[in-house]
Image (tube, rainbow, N blue to C red; front, top):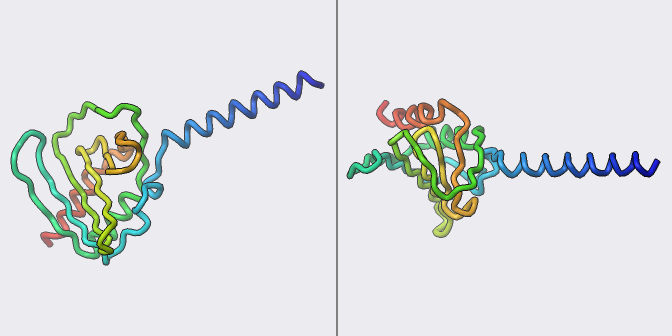
Length: 148
């Protein structure tokens, strides 16, 4: 009987470790601090640039765009990357700045195309790999609503 309990305990410990590792590496968008507080009252801007090219295009989002951006971020999944540097191939760079209009809180998300995001003051400066292959297209669609 003792041997059977040891096997059960070891199996439980291994399952807990696997579960902890899965939860650490897989990040849901709604787990990013500040995403749940994004509302149409927030001031949201997106700066779009191209890697190593000077100049950027700036967009200020309206309330509908802010709602869609919140949905995009909170409904997305990401994989934590252990390295502080990453190699990326998509050269479109987006900087999303969210001002909660309370004179102190900001959420800044740096996005390299359809590949990675990094969030200031979160995840110890590490990158998150975007799992949704349509993430960039959805972000571009949100930006394009401004022109309509």
